Amino acid sequence: MQEFLNHIRESNLPPISIVVFLVVSLLLGFGHRMLLESIFAKFQFRRLSLIYFALVLGGYVIEQHYALLITILLFLSTFLLAIIAIVITPFVRRAQRNRFREEMDKKRPKQSLDDKPKKPFLHRFVNYAFHVVLFLFLFAHLHIIGVIIYFVGRGIFAKWKNGPSLFKLQRSLPTSKIRSVASGLVEIEGKVVIDNFIASRIDDLPCAGYSYFVEEISRDYDGRESFHTVYSDSQFLPFYLEDETGRIKVIPDQLELLQFRERSYRSAGKRYVEYIIEENPMRTYLMIGQAARKDNEMVIRYDESHRILSMTPSEEVENHEETMKFLNHLKPYFIVFLLWMSLVLSSDIKVTNDGISITFHQYINQVLTVF
Image (cartoon, rainbow, N blue to C red; front, side, top):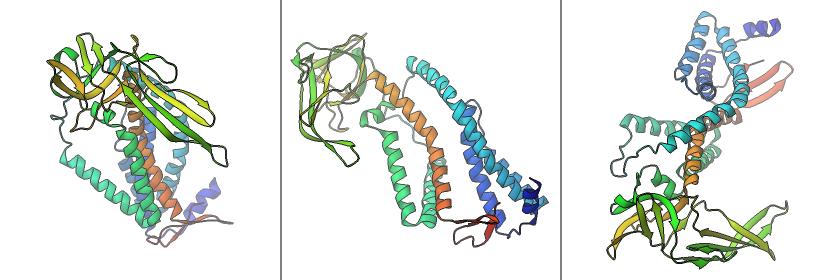
């Protein structure tokens, strides 16, 4: 340990090194903030990056080698915090999920689509500026690879975050009671009631309709399976959704079934898959479509302007909300990971007899001996 401290004191640090230490302190502060907030869910550590920045800058003012020592200690503490977070976070997540379920049970009111407020200008400006800086940073360090990483990462998060149209609209639409439903795009929730039944394709179960697929099964050299749809068929009869206030008829033209339970079997190199709408007094469904009057009664049908008539089990909405919370929490980790990977991949790292030598990007031409 004493030898390590002596080596730091004897290190010849170029003037540009303080810039590197300060940038690293900000990144470490951001990463440590995410780790600490995952451990201590009730606390926030918004100023941690500024505290680290001040520590490193203060150390440099007192003695420039202190800045290097503080940066190394902060970096090493990342591993300790990560281990603690891995152990504790599952228990924190469980408590958060329990609180979330309680909140869902209370059915918090939501704003309508037309009244949804826009984000403040400053919030949007900071968001755009951040993406511009991130893009330029990745491009400067990794060139075309950085551009690919940026757009692929952003596409993955956008797809995960938005999900199908039903889940995007569900976050904004209020859940209407069936008796008081008004004309226009609506979200309703209730149990399926069927007057006229048809038989499902696979099990001959009585249902209001089904989506049926025949898929060819193929395998690659590693034995991994892939499926290609060679035939599909969907048939639906009108049915009702019913809540404690009444029932409403659903005209199922262009109906989309999301996250329904799959019924399937395999035969002769093919997989046969089916999703059905069946009566189940223990299960409720959430539906988004257009409420309109037809033959002197209100019905739910396909909404041409929003191009949606979708239906999903209510429990899948809760699962989706929990997933979105997890992804929103994961996003800062992903961004920090991209920044660190771009810095590592753009640096020349060599292991020598004297330790680890790191030559940073062309903007920093000096070699810093870390160990």
